[in-house]
Image (cartoon, rainbow over all chains, first blue to last red; front, side, top):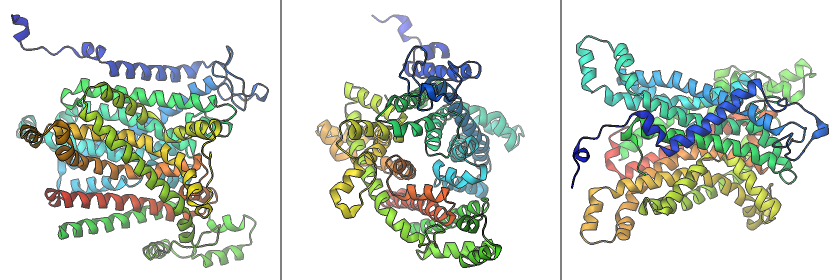
Length: 289
Length: 315
């Protein structure tokens, strides 16, 4: 026997209810929150002064005083991890900012104008793909000096074509929709239509992609700092902690295991969050599972 | 098809020309005088001038660009400031480490990703599928250089099966050389394979939903036969594209991994050149890497068009 309620059209559940029932969104969001909280907390409190060198207490194993132990310079590993989260987050946030700030307007412009200008913008973007962030960082190293800014700019430039392509691809079909036609008939110009109708309709896509690029940025920052092209001492960075741990792999593998795990968890968390957001914000994009 | 390849070749040439101009310009605005680096800050002005003249550093920038770019086209990368040997010779030596490493890593990636992705798609929603998806999710999040360190910890330091770093050279025999490349190649391959396996899975799932697959099933083929004979090949097309795009990440990864294992490849060369301010080496190696990415993607696109005639109309 069929209950009438089963036949009635299904009312979509509110966003919050769906979000709370989505495992990867929850798990990813929780991890991202913990990392963000850890980074924020490090501004006001770390168990020990982050990066303070004290040779007398070098290479201590984990204890109640030093939860993750100390490194070869006697620095407290937990404090370094907390402050390193700031570096990771700051670099990849700014890099995403550069990517969104330059890429989205370029993509929107290419979609609004099409023709030669649109073609030129998209061709230029294809071209940037030939330069991986590492190559850009190598080339720019002496322009900005090795440091956080170099990493931000290198990863940021790499992000530009990603967002330009996304905005372009999302805007093109929108331009053929009825509500854009209506706006045109009402006498609105290209810029106004883009701002009022095109951009708001692709916000979801941009948020999802920003999450993905954030996680890629954290991986890239770690790699750049590892090879010495990113953040410089004494500013703590997970990538550089791994570099410094390398010669001590046989003696104190924990010095490599802890920062590496921090990177993996953060990236994993952001990727899960991105997958969750993709499902929640746009069911049509939900990947096959 | 010929017209298409011609058009693509033309755009390839333009891309390479612009890329070389950008690389040259960026290197040009870098502070620091190579002549001073070579001779030290106490060098006499006339010695400096003589050295600049010897390396052509006193000529105007456009002229030097043309000389450099023209040289590249003829396989001449100039003379290294620090080693005083042709850059081409340095690159050729290092290539024998980097190229085999990249190729082994690429082969491993393909050999792992395609069967694993296909298996997950064929057994969709099974425990195998969930396991593959979880493992690849983690695999994507692992930085390859950290994974390399873990491999060293397990297989070099603890088990002592493989060397922790260094390269004996191919003259020491193929086996010791290959042994030195195993861990670096695995470290490069696994994160890449995680991405590719996911692409393979979703691509095969898409193909399995196509009408011709239903027809194949309807005419009596088993599910396994359908996957093997019809779906698999078509599913490989997007996988190829992603592999082309992944190539640039593979190169960047090779450069970093060479630093983990102290392998004397292009990556080590470029980092040594940076610290020694041997800009001609940096410039030429960077250009070589960029060119190889562009050429690989060109080959993928042309290969793609050869398989699928519909793509030839687009430029």
